[in-house]
Each structure stands twice: as C-alpha cells, then as structure tokens.
Length: 330
Ligand SMILES: Nc1ncnc2c1ncn2[C@@H]1O[C@H](COP(=O)(O)OP(=O)(O)O)[C@@H](O)[C@H]1O
Ligand SMILES: [Mg+2]
Image 1 (cartoon, rainbow, N blue to C red):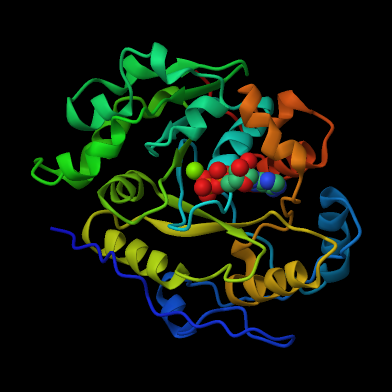
Image 2 (image 1 turned 45 degrees about the vertical axis):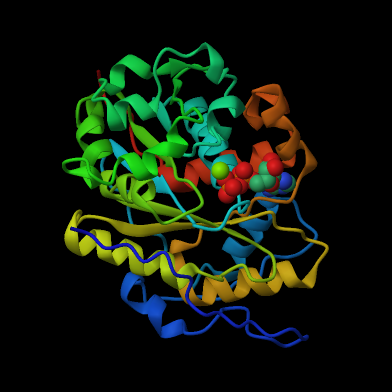
C-alpha cells in the first residue's frame, strides 16, 4: 500500500535581492531528476514568448543539450503540482487544445473536484450523466463519460463536485490507487495524448493520476515561493514510481505566468533551468489577462483569442512537448 505524506516539507525561502529561490533542501530534488545536463538560460525580458524561445535557442545552440526524443504515442501526461493556482488547469486545457490543433487526438481528464478544466472546455457539469467520479468509484466505463469540446480532436472526461468525496470514498476501495489506470487502459488506442489535470493536493486522487501516467508535467509559476513544496511532489512521484508505476518520470517543466517586466520572473526561470536542465521547456507561458479570461467563455485560448501571446505560447509548447511525433494511423 502506498503511503502518501500530506505533510508539507519545511521550506524557508528568504526575502532579499540575491536570494536563493529554490527552497531547501535542494538535494531532495535529485532522485527524481536524473538530468545532470543543467543549463541556465535567462530569457530576454522584453520579447514575446516565441521570440524568447528563438533567441535563447540561438544564444545557446553550440552547447545546449536538446530535449530527449519524445516517447511513442499514446502518451499519458499527469499535470501535477500540489500548489493551487500555478497553471495546471490552464496548461492541461490549452496545451490540449494546441496539440489538437496540430492534428492529435487529445483527452483531458479532469481530476479536480473544482472542475475547472471541465467548465474551461465549455462543459456544464450540471448537464452530465456521468463523470470521472463514476469511473473511479462506480466502475463506469471511461468511454461512457467522454465529452466532445468545441475543438476538433479535443475531448474531456469531466469532473463534478462529487469528486470532492472521492478522496475519502476511495480509501477502502480495492486497488484504490489504480482505478484511473485501469479505466484508461480501455481507451488508450483512441487518443494520442492524455492530459490528466490533477488537484492541488497529493492525496489518493493525485496518486491515481500519477499511477496512470508515464510522464509528469509540472507547471511552475514564476513567482516567489515558486518551488515551495516541490521536493514533496518529487518524493511522491518517486514513491509512486517505486510502488505502483516504474515508468513514471518527471519529463516536463513548464514555466507559467512569466512576467517579463519583473526581475523576479527571470530569476525564478534561471534557477529552475539550473536545477532541471533540459526538462524545462524553452518556451514560457507569459502572464496574460486573455489566458485568465478564456475559461469563463468555456474556450481554450487558441479559440478565444487565437493570435494572443498566450495562444502562441501554448502552440509553441505543444510543438516542444510533442516533438513533432507523427500521428498514429487509425
Ligand atoms: N499565464 C497566465 N496568465 C494569467 N493568468 C493565468 C495564467 N495561467 C493561469 N492563470 C489564471 O490563474 C488562475 C490559476 O490558474 P489554474 O490554471 O487554474 O491553476 P491550477 O490549476 O494550478 O490551480 C486562474 O484564474 C487562471 O485563469
Ligand atoms: Mg486546477
């Protein structure tokens, strides 16, 4: 049985101009980060994200190690970080939409009782007959609760507030950590990418997400305390890897809410790159009001404002994450 610590690791970032933004103890991060080819690249502060990506690529081309080749499709990516408000849902929805725009078939699985990915993709939870709750606790086939969205190729398995009870209701369940994985196995052939939007906690629901995935995407907000609690997340990834899911790996770090006007954002980005190396996507997601407005219209940014900086950033990220893998023939 997997024991998941709920306790926060003591993290003590210190205020001041030349502070270390990585909370201690940094060595805790090491086991989950096998990448030793760390490169620090500060993004130019004034350029749009696509431009930033290009410039930093040019600046480091001779020495920068490239991201490893992407794994074969289908890929199951858990979007996880136990901090709330760091951009997990925004990333699951918009990366999903951008990947769908590239022609891939995408299933976003909403594992958060708040249901933000569900509503952000235009689904009204009140109109649903079944949701991820029924999949996890009533053995309803996943296929029965997949909903199409306004984007061709983009589907969502919605969550409702029922899921709030699942954390407790799962406790006595048989194979409680593997409910999602077993459900996903039945639809693996139907999609190219699965994006699992995890809740802001490290409980059983997140463990289900991690046990079903082969990769973890960690969005990191370019703010103070950005990395607080990250050691805890990485330890949990290690626990799931050791006990439930040997193929699980943190493969992708996405810097979110990057505000080019602040030095702090640059500092955070540099520290994250120094520690995580090529796992960190070159493109960053800018802080953008349009990105925060899109969910209230039930649309991903690529539909809501297709030429906005946020849409461009998520399209560039979709290229990075997919590595241009050819779509599967169906
Ligand atoms: N790049 C961004 N720029 C501006 N606002 C953002 C950005 N990314 C997310 N937000 C907003 O920040 C809030 C938290 O984001 P969300 O994706 O819901 O985080 P999480 O799922 O980690 O809790 C939401 O209101 C969202 O619209
Ligand atoms: Mg969320």
